[in-house]
Image 1 (cartoon, helix red, strand yellow):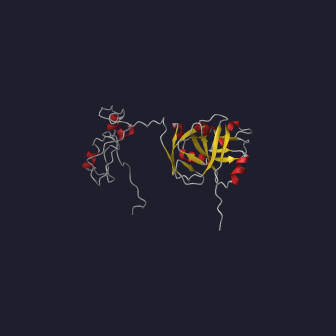
Image 2 (cartoon, rainbow, N blue to C red):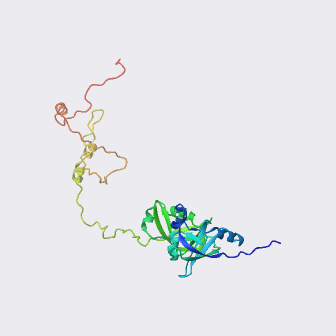
Image 3 (cartoon, rainbow, N blue to C red):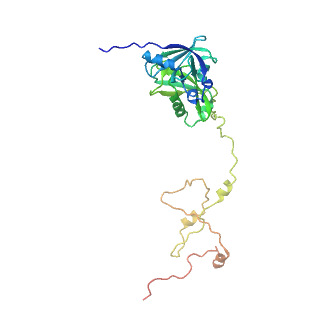
Length: 292
């Protein structure tokens, strides 16, 4: 028979400091996430208490009854101290060096979360949802009501956690979570044109080239036959039909093709044919075979 060792809660008080006051190099990995740094004695105590993994904690400011939840990144802080991100200190309304209660907790796995960007500039990012999901990899859990800060392209964007499911605080480690956005407070809906602005009853000025287009007639001229006979009268009358560009020919008959030609006669044409300045198919004919 297996013996089940009961899990005892971890409860400690530490003096809280922001990550910027931690000795050594700058720790952006802590400042841009949702995890804290605890002293080595905390790890030893947690191991003896058989604490469940991943280790999640509830941070409580008992003076102002403010709380949030977080994970742990390392156990390298000085004894009696813990270092947390600056945005987390603002949520808890803590000053540097104030006492904070740290308690181990077990949270449900996240299914849904809704965020409200505090600036509409966040929407200018090409794919804001992908950016947020990538930044949340540095977080262990989310708490509804918190104002979290994420960094992207050397800019810090604040996001308010409006809602989390299935509880007020959820774990986001190795989970399939749906993410939704609410419009930022300074977001302005784009104006759409009204019916009055779309009214086109006023008479518009004619296009400068409209008159010239209405006078243009393509391919005007008289028809000619290869056998030298006179062209049909219907063809000759068709070329005199006024054509306006851009206006369909409502008199068009299916199965007919009309070619409108216009030719400007030159001096040689007028000399060859004084009447219309054009003489078609003039010249002698030739054959490949010799006449017998």
